[in-house]
Amino acid sequence: MPDYKEMYLKLFRATEKAMRILEDAQLECEELYISAPETKITLLESPEGSDTASDTPR
Image (cartoon, rainbow, N blue to C red; front, top):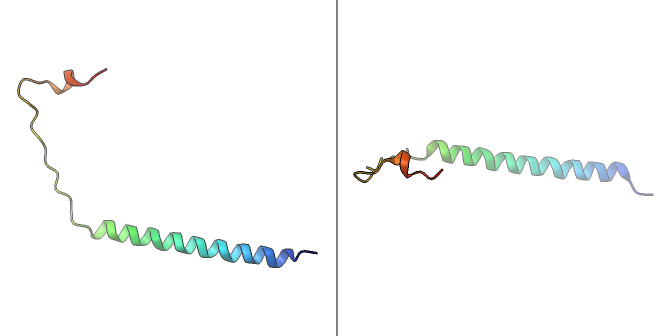
């Protein structure tokens, strides 16, 4: 007869380990995002004589 308790505990421990790995990766990525230098945004001029609203296909 299979040892269901042992099977359950093995699966539970593996699930907890996987959740910790994912949480650690998420925290690391959040820290990388927070500590990254701010991105400089540059607005480009539209070509003369073009209306951006009319250039957009509908």
